[in-house]
Length: 248
Image 1: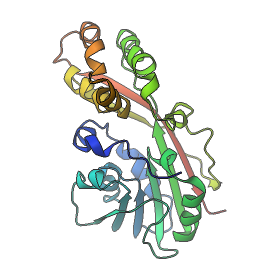
Image 2 (image 1 turned 90 degrees about the vertical axis):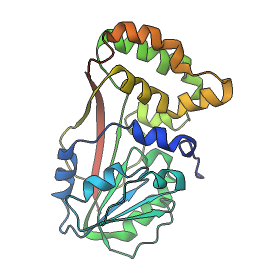
Image 3 (image 1 turned 180 degrees about the vertical axis):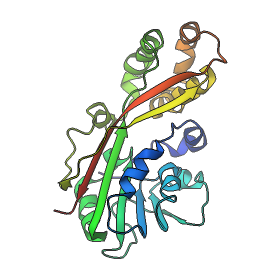
Image 4 (image 1 turned 60 degrees about the horizontal axis):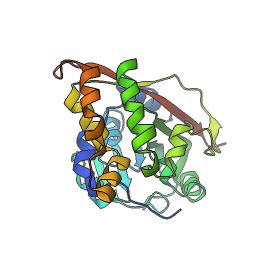
């Protein structure tokens, strides 16, 4: 598929509202390859995963096709940020110990990317791709959330979103499977932080562009009633799907 940019137009808002990945995820992934010299974070966005990888790898190359997204990334001496498509990186053959793809695999030309991954991975290298599904807080809040996600915004989601809905079950992963533990994303957010997250969705931004209306405004009163004290922090949870493999 060709590169379709759903995030550059609101890269700042998107970067500020992303949930954090659990540190245990990166510790697990770093334990798998034979060496920890170089990690390649593909579709790096604003660099969340790349920054976490610096705790475990000497060098991290982080690539994304969106210059606006990379422009929001936090600089780090161990990270080399590059504006490059996943399918055409400037990496030496057999140089990468770990490839990570965080919430991005569904945007790639899968076959072309996998061909590149096989070329740049070392013989004992590891590739890991993950995504996270819809958030859950508590039933009264989730009902309002679903009205926005599955109702108001349903026509505005990119078609690739179906892969997230299916937990990557319909995406090929032609590598030797490595067993992995389960991980969950967890944030403690106030009401305003949660609403900022909802507004950062590509579907919310598309609705705003095409309709001139903020869809989150339509559900905000009901969400506020369900939330209670807006300053109260609540646990927001996202289930993660993680695929890990080696060259077979």
